[in-house]
Length: 83
Image (cartoon, rainbow, N blue to C red; front, side, top):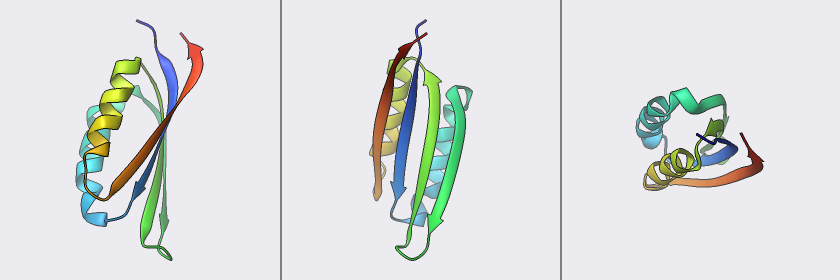
């Protein structure tokens, strides 16, 4: 199956969303290459970046689930490389 590398950027505007985010990321853990979370207390947000190597459908599914969480904004960037 062909996979792509993608970067999922997540801005969390409400810390109450953290458990749902972590549950979803755990569900897709086999496809996650790396994760970095940065709290930004000055603006009362957290920023998380996720690097994935997965089929396009899997990346889209993760992005869709995260995007449905209230107070969570996401953007996904796909590489042009396909394995």
